[in-house]
Length: 183
Length: 358
Image: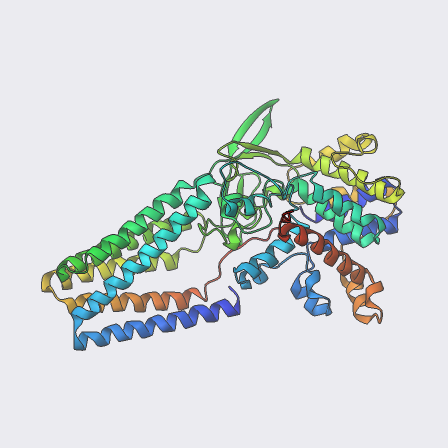
């Protein structure tokens, strides 16, 4: 990664830390407003990303060997976005379960990818650590959110999730990634 | 391709085509220098930045992948390492966006190759060396495109080396890893490649990165599924391709040297090269990461002169100290490189001519 790209990544990380801080601040005012914002943000991001993948599939990837992976990925991501949107009006405990599911799934994928990368002799330790952290967040949501049925916990978990992603971005800026020369 | 072919084999081809030892050294120096002339190098010698013929990994990672950045990457890699075969290529039921990438697929004996070699006729030997690099790479890098593209350059797990066991062909699975510190393990068929990225424009999807260095090794014959070929197998026979590349280089160099007629596609100097076929095929088929020593010995046998290792020091010093920089080895190389880049880039990005209504 170049110096410019590193700086961009670090600035992005700092901005995410600020958003996380703002979300934590909403807890002190009205945590239900924070939940709405979180869900709207996630769903819009997922839907847009899913549509972009589907567009890419219809224009290009459909002609490619293995291109259906892009199609499936596009549908899954968009579906996830629509599903998130439908959760805007439901009780906070459902949202907690949903966040729990997302984090647990994401964590499990990261752990599996870490093992795959280890097999391929690629850098894997950071991936494994992030996987375990995500699973830990899911467990925290389960214990705190479901048992205490608190929207404050939901906002807090999401804010901490963003803070964690921000730190991951910043750390990632300093990790060397292999790339081969083509001569 | 690597130094073994671009430097030593090009020297051999030039000698067989009738050039003197000194002329052959100038040609092979330029052919090899194409793989080293980066923006970083040009900054060091204070040369023209537009003369870059390759990019360092760090330079690539620094590129913004917007329209302008992609054009810069494509102008370097398509002009010198992945010369497009047919810019007017047509395929049914394909989108325009797809065809913009598809038309950049490199292959041998295209119209652009003819123009590239013929342009070198009236140019200094440095331009001839550049043309020979491009010609040789059309054989090694065929079926890949010199632009970042998942839909063209991607490969999947279906990758087998074809081995000759007692006259019968046997397929051995190839494993790819992404660890930068490891080197290719020929004996166990474990090779380094770029990691899969599902972004169309990722730098990891440039050229043959997803197929590792397999196209650069002369000994290997393998089969795989190119992303663009509708699930049809592609067999890449490098020993045969490299032999054709060498024979075509001798033919091209001979026509330039004699100045008797224009370079034509699909013609080879087999009349000259076949005399050495056994020796050349032995060099090409020996399983190793570099064949430099054998090519060098073959070159010395042909010319009876010592072939020095590739060294940039003198040329760099000459360019730095010269008052008339254009009349130095590097100066002539830079001029030829800029002209070549202009030729290819203009063809790639030329807007289609609209017919006027009468």
